[in-house]
Amino acid sequence: MFEQMNDSVLTTFGEPFTYKGAAGDVVLQGVFDESIDQEQIGGIGLSDRVFTLSLQTAHVAANGIALRETVRVRGLDYQIIDLHTDVAGMATLILRAY
Image (cartoon, rainbow, N blue to C red; front, side, top):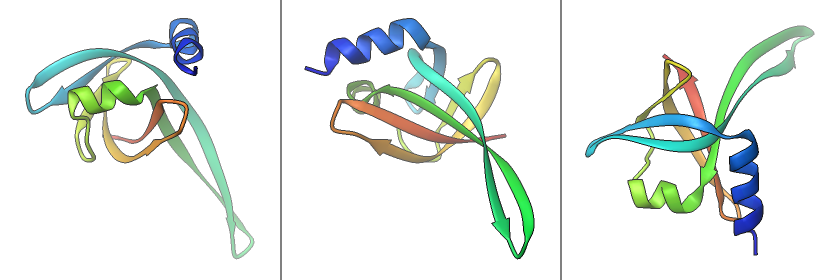
């Protein structure tokens, strides 16, 4: 049911990225996002960049994508620090820039 919607999102907003796994480099399609996370601690405002990469859960499983592995997006390397999946068949990788 969600597969067609996920394909449409990836076709419209997706871009190629390289997963640098143990078996070698694999080029996949995902939606990259960079946002600013703002917090208030003791009256002092702090902000941090948050990088995410969304792709189909099936591609995560098929390619053995795991924590602490590396992806290359837009010419920069990122480490996967967290991974979330949803019931619609999409996975979101939380990334840290090197």
